[in-house]
Length: 101
Image (tube, rainbow, N blue to C red; front, side, top):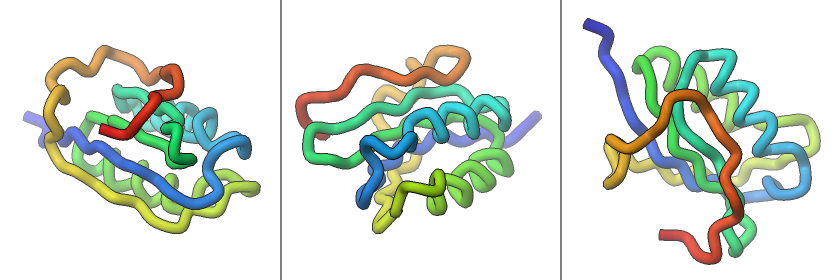
């Protein structure tokens, strides 16, 4: 049995309008993770990712750097957040949320 994790990330810094969501989606798909990414109205980006623990670790390392025009200042993580059991297969860019939850 593969050890899996579900993590919610809230990423702050220069992460909107710099290709961060596309970078996140491409990275997650390359690693075979499930989940989604969306902008939040406060300028941060929220990510929900689920998959094998080693792949989640690699994913987190990559989003801490981000694409070339991004500048990640801080990432808040929450393991096994509410709603993590409802993650669909694949990785999607969601609509901007009006507020962080």
